[in-house]
Length: 269
Ligand SMILES: O=c1ccn([C@@H]2O[C@H](COP(=O)(O)O)[C@@H](O)[C@H]2O)c(=O)[nH]1
Image (cartoon, rainbow, N blue to C red):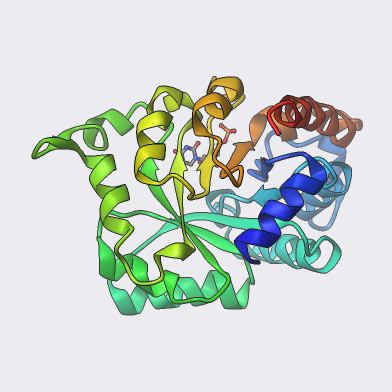
């Protein structure tokens, strides 16, 4: 998917909501456990109930890998279901990959070719040659960790290297990489006060923003400081939406939560 297509979808749906599909079998409604593939059954119901309110879905691969081969199968079924039924939706494999060049190419093939995701998250720690293999894929997007939502972000990311915070160096340096127009960045909603500085470095890049909902990030502050001319934000909520209820009405309740966020977003568009 191109960035223009993503922006057009945001304008049409008046939403820049991304729903995280972080499925935990201990948290889903008990009646689904009787299904042949409970994870896929859960995802399908959530997707069908919320697809008109969001522009992206983000399965975090950890929640699938934890269940071995079965979990990977559920992930595959979920992405195929999305691509077949809702091809306008932007898909994110939250896998946080990145390795030496030839290994990164194989990671990129796994998520962009085999599973046909529109994007994948990567870690910047191994540098240019670990990220450029992902950037080589046309109309695919590489979402690099910049300033994460967790407390540990202060361990390295905000520390000064020379006279500049490390996350700023990551952002600035990555702009010079080959095919850097295919880059987006992860910035946590819990770091809303940093968005002004981040926008000085990457004024038009899309930012994937996790941390609204369960982690306490503030949507209004993120919008106030983070919105760009082409919107430039994908705000993610996972647990806050998908576990709104663990009864038979779970999909309906998830849609209600998604609608609340969509309406807050509409006010900014
Ligand atoms: O900085 C980061 C990067 C990734 N995540 C991931 O996003 C979701 C957030 O889930 P919630 O339930 O809405 O808190 C999850 O998959 C994280 O691994 C993040 O939170 N922060």
